[in-house]
Amino acid sequence: MGKGAYGIEPGTLQGIAQQVKEIADLGVQVAVVIGGGNIFRGISGDTLRLDRASADYMGMLATCINSLALQGALEAIGTSTRVLSAVEMRAVAEPYIRRRALRHLEKGRVVIFAAGTGNPYFTTDTAASLRAMEMGAEVIMKATKVDGVYTADPKKDPKAVRFKQLAYIEALQRELKVMDATAISLCMDNNLPILVFDLTVPGTIRRAVMGEDVGTVVGNLSTILAGG
Image (cartoon, rainbow, N blue to C red):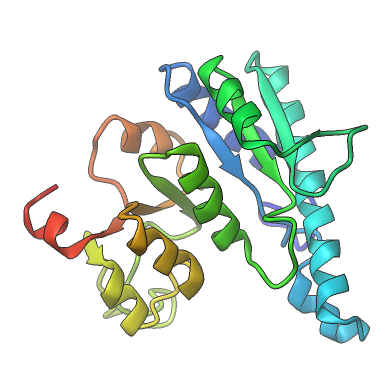
């Protein structure tokens, strides 16, 4: 939603599409998991007096809107894409089938995963971790508006320090809100590193893919100590 309070801001959408295209053009297999908070968050259902499951399903549909928007922006700049939804809606997206998603990646298409896991009570973070495991991803790149993970909120605490590397268990124990606990635990159990970075800076994804020092890497402590 960019600097707006709601919806999809065209400039922001185009900027994200351009960053994704840059790494897809390098031959990197790219899968994207999109949230729907710019339209509706499941936890917002409380104010509407909705039960949690219904509110979460509404949030999943919001992710589908965002997925179609990103697909349109990517296709407009010449990047082939496929949207796969965990909630079946064949008129607008393919149903999520793991082998089909892998095949799209092998063909060089950007795969956009919509509707989270398809189940209420699970966050976009957890959906991203799950899909990353299923796709055999090398890393989860957690896009935020901050350039990494800090000891405290840098907007509120001027003494906050950014971590360059961080162990999974420390992120959990200190409740640093890298991702939700379920997602971090899933990554920890499967030794999948998480890169937290600032999406609002153009070219950041490409820099990260090229091995530059970008954001904060959350991973296995022994691997971090070994400099991996």
